[in-house]
Image 1 (cartoon, rainbow, N blue to C red):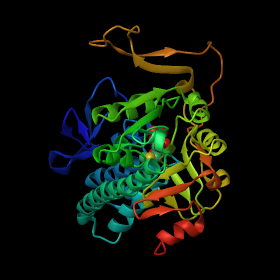
Image 2 (cartoon, rainbow, N blue to C red; image 1 turned 60 degrees about the horizontal axis):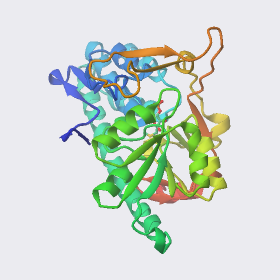
Image 3 (tube, rainbow, N blue to C red; image 1 turned 45 degrees about the vertical axis):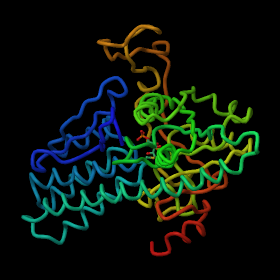
Length: 373
Ligand code: MRU
């Protein structure tokens, strides 16, 4: 997708494949900088500190991390250690384990001398497939949005379709296009009038900093709201649909996504607002049913709750040259607790939008699209 008219992706090879560049998402929206990852340690640190984040991008970064490890030492022991190191960085998004397993399966039968090149090829294939899957999600979601817009009463025809999203499930969370934002970009490019309510998404503010940034760069009309505003907007008919991504989807259609997603689903259910979840197949964990009981929820540092990062400017002041800074919100000594994800049960999900089409959030729905899995 575009930044100031230039097409970008979130990750790529550099130095003839000896290192990997990524966009440093901890600096957005205030500074745009790329960063080089030259070792498995760099890749693991980039994932755990959220230089890169978003389930699909975490998976691709993990795959390239294994490549970086194998370039140094292609032996079985080093492969196993790098796999464990990367897999431990973020426990909730299943794409990471999926991508690491895919690279490991590809390289394990090969002679050591061929492993790094094969890992590079497999990581590249995972990245390319992610782009294709996200674009296909966009096409299926676009049709759904067109139907929603057409079904509105005559007096609302021509008004923008108001879509609410939580966290960042745009191109910055994937390699390109995004999951939940792909249908929004497709709709905008197709000329469908659309406006996005962007949940700020405390504590890391992926909505306020990343979703707002990328929508702005693509020229999509949007408004940032505090996380608690969504229910109120729905009660007043200001939301036509909610669309979010997911970090892990169980085979019966329970959806684990950024903390606060569940509350949006409850509010949507109570107000008859459709609640869609967009996902590539790499996010489905076919091994589990019950998301609440079985998905490990990452607990991150309490400092993300007690402190907040931003640009050191007063409202109305220009941000030019201002420093990125962290401020404390809570009284010294107050404890913070920071579960990073929650699970929305399938019963609250109107439909799943995948690269293969739209399905009911149920085992039968998913099996209908993925009989081969
Ligand atoms: O903690 P993050 O920023 O990695 O969480 C990201 C999300 O929850 C996204 O909504 C998710 O990965 C699904 S779509 C790419």
